[in-house]
Length: 333
Image (cartoon, rainbow, N blue to C red; front, side, top):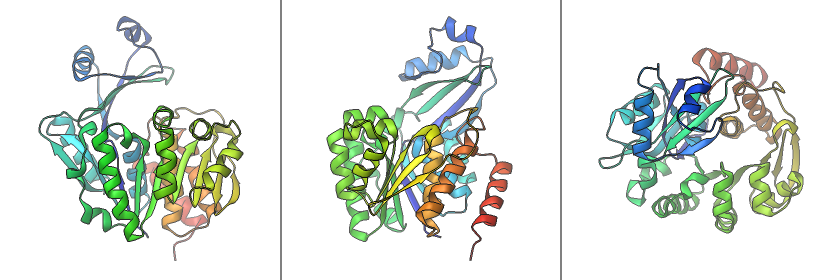
């Protein structure tokens, strides 16, 4: 089994069940993702003091890495958390997920978080404070740890700040020189809007595998046809994945395009993190040296399973069933 090193933005997810009246009273737009500062987070959490809280590890890259670990892939997670209660909770849970911890600790910036308000209709309203993530820099990159893995995975969120860009490019150059497989998940439509030309150069120069959803691909190539976007993306990297929601996904591998059908229900319970989990399924297949079509099936299957649950991670019980299913379909040697 090949190993995967991921670098991303660790966010502690703080899940709280509220009613619509709470959202209206605090002027929070239901179903949206709001970027907030540390003072806004403090005020929001003070207003939620009487509500039960649940904590879980969040962030796009961490969601992928944690799921890979649950599938049995040796994984490492890098990023930056604060020297505070939330950072301690995050690192403890990462260890419980059997992920190797290469996160650095900031003494001057708090751990990033997403306060997720869940209403009775299962709608999730996110209030995200990026915190220490924005200050991950070159000095935080542990090159020996990066180079001890077989695959390097990162997301478009690492282009949020100049120091994050510098850190990711340092790691990418070393990973490429070693011949590691490099996987990039664009992950955010706003990130590609801000960094279109930079992302095109980044993919062309470094990336072996690139994930995009149809909207991200449309902006990247200024084209509305997901098939044509997949073909264009496949022209600048070995393996290109374009996810197209209920219509399935397209994968270009060495210029051959595969159509991957949707697995799972047509009406989801919660789509949070579905793209992250799709990526984990595909990378799991690659780590096992399975075919592109089999890796695509696993990706679609996992995405179909996660949208039947709340949140972006599987319970231990659910993951056991998933592993049993995969073991039957793709027996280990």
